[in-house]
Length: 78
Picture 1: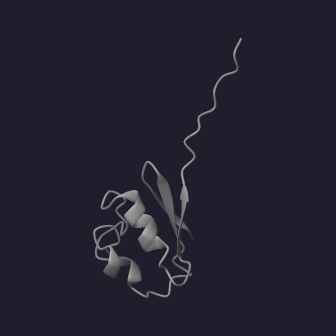
Picture 2: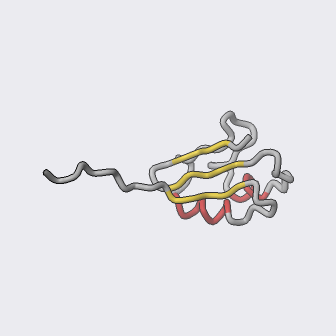
Picture 3: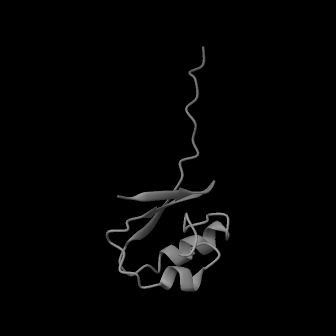
């Protein structure tokens, strides 16, 4: 089952069934990825660009990210 972790800019998707436990995520950015805590991902632990850079190092693809859609639907003009 996928788990989602978000800040204002991005959402991280973690697929635990795909994870090979390489430890690259938490060894590289422990202030965000800390397996001793629950939840283990703290999106307030670093800036968005640092989080993206670390997620992109995941060798299994268990971690991925996408930008949050900031567009809001507007009511049609009358």
